[in-house]
Amino acid sequence: MLAALEFESSVRLSAVPLLLHQQAMQLAIAAARANRFFPFGAVIVRAADRQVMATGVNNGSTNPTLHGEIVAINDYVARHGNRGWEKVILYTTGEPCPMCMAALAWTRIGGVVYGTSIEKLCQFGIDQISIPASAVIAAAPFYRGEILGPVLADETDALFLDRERLPMAGA
Image: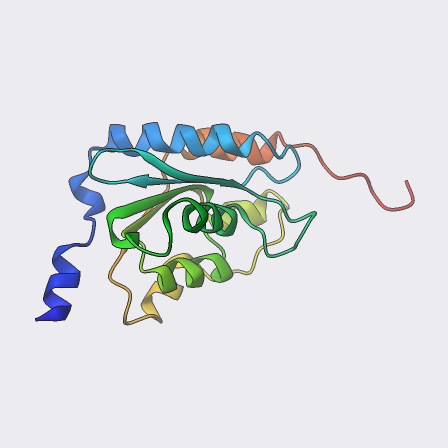
């Protein structure tokens, strides 16, 4: 009975019109612009009313684990506590890496929508662990959330292609 209730309260990404996913992805893109070198931005949106509950942008220069999704998770907890995850959707400019997708699975977030795939990020010269988020989800039988992507990939791809490059050491 409990499992059925958990499943019923999950977000169905396919029930959300694509236009609403695109509008939320635009917010993640806007957040990502705060990091001109690694434009990984994320927003957490409540599915029921589309209210932005948290934002995040990559802050790996401070701490290598502070990817945009992790910063958004921390922002959400600071503002709303560690509850209500099944009712929100995280939108992120880049497909979550294995670390971030595992963290999102542990939160039991209602869903994840991404722009640029891990495969494309690698093609753009951005270091990635080549494990797709869907593989992390498949290895987490307790997680019932869905993943959707790519959404607005032309725009998120452009963010990563046009980003500034860090100066070479010794240059």
